[in-house]
Image 1 (cartoon, rainbow, N blue to C red):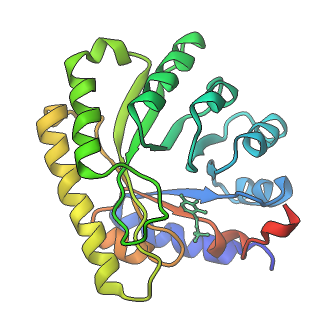
Image 2: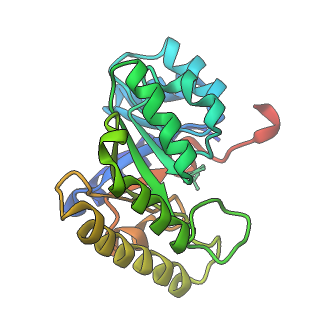
Length: 229
Ligand SMILES: *Cc1c(COP(=O)(O)O)cnc(C)c1O
């Protein structure tokens, strides 16, 4: 299946009234496909695998804003720290500390989103509410120890289901949690503003439930075939 520039234009226009940003998810897709969306005006791309991201970043235009959206192991942060803009799936204090350390080495500030587990499935990564509170308390106790990261918001993945009501409920709950975290831990600071929810199958619901960032892959790039990776 080929890339779909018409779908891209359509999605961009759908996002506009919501002032939401598109992260074009290009995992497993070749650089020529990314270049085609770059030509069409897209600058923000999301990848899931460290090695793949490093290889693509090296050969694609330097003004691409790279988001890492997959599960990230602490020992691999160093490979993407020189250039990554936002890491979506921060799910432990240890990972946040390592991102801070590596960002500081490069005199950079890396934006981080805290991934919260909202789906009914057991398999999806992310913090539960108690772990989220613990992480935020550690952060709030010593913000100066996190000077090279900016906690810019939160991220979640809804249950993979055709039950729209369930997806909506999960997004809604995350939006409410986002609001209370913003007040409690970030004193309503303007920089804590991103709610990364919504993928190809559920982004229209996510937008209605407060998404500021949708992560869309297959609608743009076609279905993924992992065996060809
Ligand atoms: C792959 C992926 C996406 C994009 O999924 P599509 O269904 O292809 O739009 C979004 N978010 C995360 C975390 C992903 O891993």
